[in-house]
Structures are given as structure tokens and as C-alpha cells.
Length: 204
Length: 245
Image (cartoon, rainbow over all chains, first blue to last red; front, top):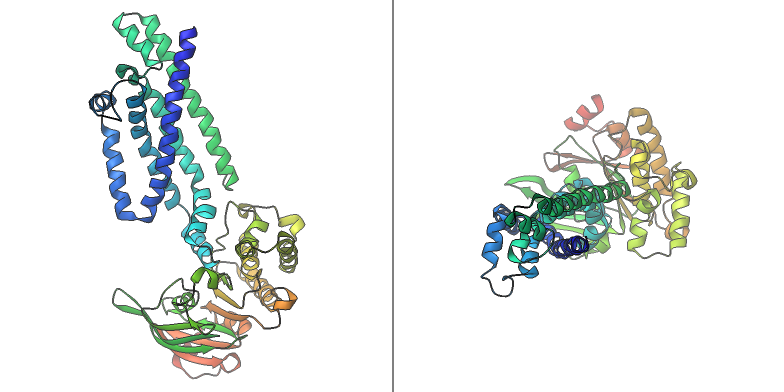
């Protein structure tokens, strides 16, 4: 039981660190993609390609890399950041694109600078979409993090892999069930956050 | 106050505005009249720099718009368009407070001015101040947009068919409310000089009701420039078609 709690905590910590980094990088990247169409398109293409790499292969690629790779929590976090990036960049871009052009024109005509337009109109209006991206990123990261145990990343995957090698179904389930519950729980909580922001921006 | 010096705007080789030269004096109320695609909206948007001229200069306040710091200039120019385009995440009071906050007015002054203006537009703050745009009818939203444009006593007010999306009965009421609000716009100390109004419309009756001078655009060119009271008897064929329509 103690080990289960420890591994759950580890699992959540890896995911939280990775998603936080992905938010810190992804929202500015999505904003950039919105402002600079062509360069943004390239950035999006790259995150798209990263997303298609199977997760076990991704960890395989990371093992020989210096600094970011190797064995343990670090490559696990790096891989999760890469997977979380796409939904966050894309949803930021979509959220900003969806801001009514007339509202944008009004803000500009009132005398807002580009920065004021971004911070006080565009980003607040894009927030529900951005949160949706964070939700998808988190749920994905919780799932992929189970595989991180293969490279010594820790987390609930440890129990699953141990169970597989020992052909012990109960052991597998003791890792798989909490991981699934975490994903479902994160989805429910973040859906509520999304609704809260949608209400605040005056939609629902 | 506003001077067009040989202003053209080109898009993909065609002239949306074709060598416009025009003077609008301080305090004048001018209607830009024309069919859709005539260039009247473009002529409006070069004043606050939403569109830059391809050639020529628009002089506002003795300086070309290309020389102005546009955000600063725009804070002195009210702008109302066909869509209310209120900020959906802000309530009525916060929408109205947009420009004063950019100008860093004290909150008490913003509050007092908003109350006075919204009252005049028949949207008492006690009932409407905390509402969000989605909770308002189209006509109410447009009144908030007008308050948002007039709150900081702008020297110039630009309107782009602000009432054409409203039903005819409300439209008439709005025109009356609007003219009253423009005349009384701003704090008393700022009211010494009357507001310059440029109003784009395709509706002759609206133009004559609101403006004292009517300028007709056609295919990017300025074709008629007449005092409003001489408009009905003007002989230009396009005017005749407008009058008879």
C-alpha cells in the first residue's frame, strides 16, 4: 500500500512537472504561431511529427542522448513534455484564431497596443480552449508516464512492468487501475476548470 | 481637423480609394454615403489608421497618420461599427471603461462618466452595469458600444453603419439617442469644442438625419460633396438614384 502511494505520487509529480513545462513553452509557442503564420506552421508540423512517434520508441531514442536523455526520471519528463506540447500549442492557436475579428478590430480601434490586445482580450478569450489543450495533454501524459517505468522513470508503470515480468495479474492491475483512475480524475477536474473559464468569458 | 491629401488605397491592383482629397473641419458632422463597395468604409478606416493609404496622406490634427503613434491617436477617436463587438468577457461597465483605463483615468471618474453616459443612452448602471454582453439585446449591445466609443470625450467619432443591423423602429430611436449623446459627449470641460463626426451609411434618410454634410462615394471616388440640406435637390445621377430609391 505504501509503495502504491509512493508510486502514485511519483507518477503525478512527473506528469505535473512535464505538463507545467509544456504549458510554459506551449502557450508562448501557440501565440507565436498565431502571429507568425508561416513559422508557426513549421513549429506545429514539428510537434505533429513528435506526437506520432510511438512512446516506447521515444524512450528508446532518448536513452543514448546526453543531458536530456539517459535512464530515470529525466528522460521520462522530457518525453512527456514533447507529447504534451502539441495539444497545448494547437489549442492555444485555435483559441486565439477563434477570437472574433470584429472584437479584435474594436480593441485595436480603441487604442490598445498589440500587447494589450493579447493580454487583455485575446488570451482571456482563448483561455477555455487553452485549458482544453492542457486537459488533453495531462490525460495523455498520465497514460504515457506508465511507460516511463521502462526507462527507470518510476511511477505506476513500475508495478505494471513488474507484474508483466512476474505474470502476476493482480500486480499489473494494482498499477493499471490507479493509473486509469488518475487519468479519468484529471479529465473530470480539468473539464470543470474549462467550464469555469468558459462561464467567466461569458459563454455558457 | 481631418484632411485627405490625394489618398489612394490599392488592393490587388484595383483602387478601393482613388485619389481622394477632402477637408473635414472641427465639429463637422459628415456622412459618407455610397453603395456597398464604394469605398466609404475604407475612407473611414484611414482616419484612425486601421487601413494605411497606399499613397497620399491623411492628416489628423496637423500630422499625417503615418507620423502618429496610432494607439495614442486612436484613444482620442471614438469608433462604432455595425457589429457591437463588445468584449464578451467583460461586463457593461468594464466594456465602457476600456478607453479611460488605457488613458489611466481615476476609477471614480470612470464610474461617474459611465453612469452619466449610460443613463443618457437609457441603460441605467444599476440595472445594466454588471451584465455581460450575451445578456443584452442587439440594440442594447449597440448602445453599450456607443457609450464605449464616447466615454472619453473623443474629438473625433467614426461610425461604420452602426445601426444597419437593427430593426427599423429601434434604428430610429437609436439615431436620436446617438445624436444627443454625441452632442453631450464627454466631461463639461472637454465639451468646449464640438465633436467631429464621420458617419458611414448607405441609408439616405439616416445620413440626412445625422449629418450636416453628405459626401457620396462611388467606385472608390468622391463624386458628390454637398451640404445635407441641398442633397435632395442635387443633380448628380447617383444622388437622384439614392433619392428615388
